[in-house]
Image 1 (cartoon, rainbow, N blue to C red):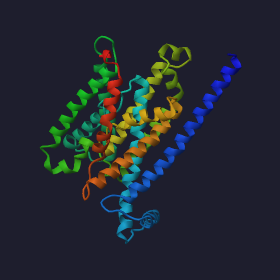
Image 2 (spheres, rainbow, N blue to C red):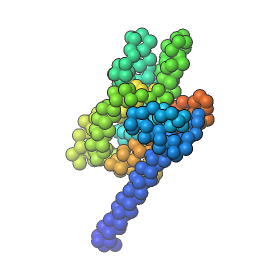
Image 3 (cartoon, one colour):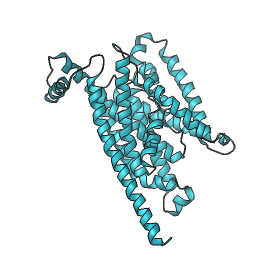
Image 4 (cartoon, rainbow, N blue to C red):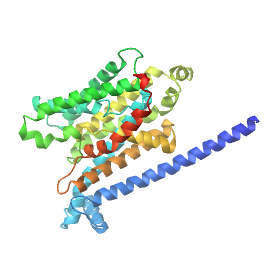
Length: 351
């Protein structure tokens, strides 16, 4: 086979791959739009397309509509926006963690990062009198970074160093311990238990524009850093030695990507509580559809995460009507089978 033929085949394969990724990108964009429409349409009361239009138009003008359907739409707009932001950030965080650890089980929920952030916020509320979104954000960042460092340290102890299974076990044990502490703090405080029960499972029902404005700069900065690291993360996937040979500063890239991933997760947890499994399911699904190129995987994961969490929130509102089932419960229900499949496919001798 001539070199020309090989190059032509490689070019053809690359072209097909690029076309497929563009198709997936367009499909996910359409999926975001459909998910938003579904979120605005369904809940304890279903609304029509006309009511959706009226509600959005009134919200844009700053008016308070008189129609019940339009009022329902307006009340759903903030939580839909938060679900979009949170889902995108969590999926992006999971993709980063999987890339820098080369661990298929890496996820902010499984590694305990978002539970650590939630615990820090609960401690701030219960013992420090913290009540501002800015205070929640800083507490969540501190808790998330401490937990991430602790889980990585525990997962690296013993022969063989850090392995996917050891990290997952360390994260699961840490999550269980931290969740117990959260419950221990909240249960004796019945006056705040209902108000803050979403710190145990995660929910976007308390969305408001003020708290979202506080976390958006962190989400933007984390996303920019993640996308700038994409090419270097592709090199890391080939191994540290190859990455160094390609001119990548391995340690620097890992630290930057880890900071971005933890910050994204912490910012979401500061306003929505610990929502798990989004960062596990979505990157794996995107890899099956569009490959492992981080330059595509990261933005596509963000879109997929946004879709998943918006739909999870909508499902929770519908099946829990007239109340709601927290979005974190829905994502856990969907994500548990994915975790089992991935864990079974991981080489157990790595333990």
